[in-house]
Length: 178
Image 1 (cartoon, rainbow, N blue to C red):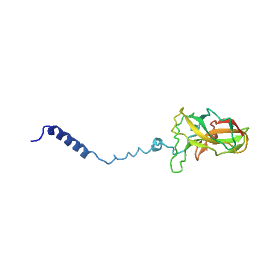
Image 2: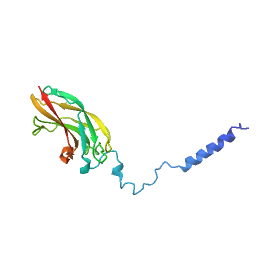
Image 3: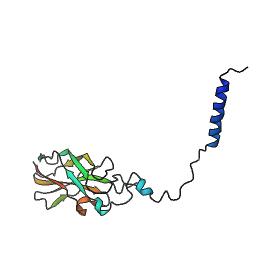
Image 4: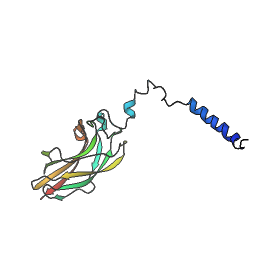
């Protein structure tokens, strides 16, 4: 004679077996129209920003006033997406094309002559919706020769363009190098 609990357990096991047999481990058939906007759903960029996407507000909360020649310094940079376009900050593919980063350049004291195009770079930590702001640490390296310089901070979409080239303002600060 079976214990009484079997009369409750057996229907539950039969029901579970039925549902397991009816369910499939195969994914449902692909929806042919689902891939039309697949790039819009990806977490990374697959194309350059549209021209109206290259608008940023960049500030340096605590800019350096003096540095030693060749000194490396980490500064904090605030970046706000001032456009009406979502910035997907990670690039797609092995070459990470379309990656968005904060970068700096050194100019002469007047801010007219470019002295170095490639100094520090640091990628934005996450995608930014229009109006959102993030703070990014950026390592800069002071020029090797003492003098008065202009440190310029801008954004770059790698392998595409600097935001300034599309009309976005940069952040600039005068720095004395000793």
